[in-house]
Image (cartoon, rainbow, N blue to C red; front, side, top):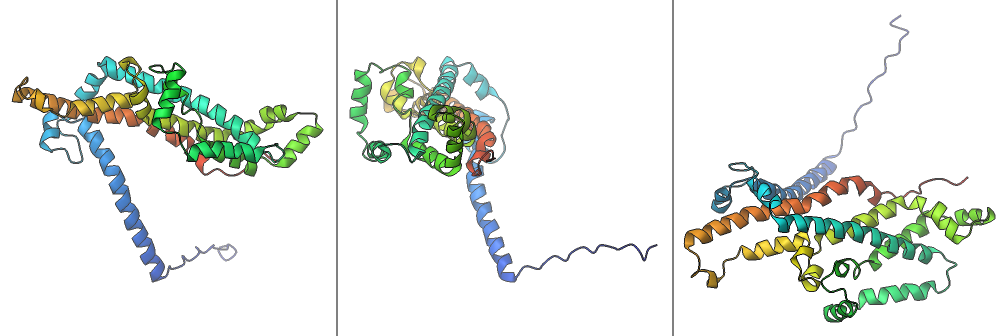
Amino acid sequence: MADGVAVARRPRRMKQPAGDRSVLTVNYLVLAFFGIAVLYPLIYVVSASFSSAEAITSGAVKLFPVDANVDAYRTLWQSPAVVQGFLNSLLYSVSGAVLGTALTVLAGYPLSRPDLQGRRTLTVFLLVPAVFSAGIIPTYVVVQQLGMLNTRWAIILPGAMSVFNVIITRTFYQLNIPHELLEASRVDGANDFAFFLRVALPLSKPIIAVNLLFYGIAQWNGWFSALIYLTDQHLFPLQLVLRDILIQNTVEPSQLGSQTAAQLVERQELFNKLKYALIVVGMLPPLLVYPFVQKYFVKGALIGSLK
């Protein structure tokens, strides 16, 4: 019986040439170096946020927390400015992402259709302002004349749509929405608007996810527009609150006469600890959202099929 059973031999593993192994070794070393260079600052910030103020000031924190505690996070969430800034950033990010994605899809899809009259003119009309920007002062005057200064609209509306994202969206529709789909829908009696809602939009999940991420991250990390257009601290985003904490961490010469040395040292230690915790809070939402949409960055195949 044993003779009748064919024993499958394990295929031999091909031996790589010495040159290929050397190249792979160098690649792994380079990737490891860049990985450490990227991860170490992140690990240090997280460790410092859980360490004591004395350990941070003395430089004892290297890789792991020293005198681990959550006092910094407890202090942050007890601060009305930080909580309000977090809620403001969340509002700006969600509303800006939804509005920007809607405008980008509505602009990118028509520009992808070859039968659109004036398509090149519209493309140039979008590209010229993107290349030759008006600058800060004219934009500020426009925002002021529209009555949006010191309002939430000043953060959401001026940068609501990105020409770069429009070009990406247009290219997506050109490559992934075949013209045969449009012709088939017209045979069934659907107009362009119905085709967009019932066919193109359901196939646009990858580009919609990408646009939501782009606009959401841009709004979450943005602080310069708030610095220019906002004076009400109740409207400040989280990043602007972090900036104020970093500025307050510096000791001005005028403060030397009004505070003792011990008070200045205690104040600096407190802000040193708070800024690391606030940095972690600020970068946590993008890190949590990105893994859910990263697959759409490499997805190029058309969702669905032609019958």
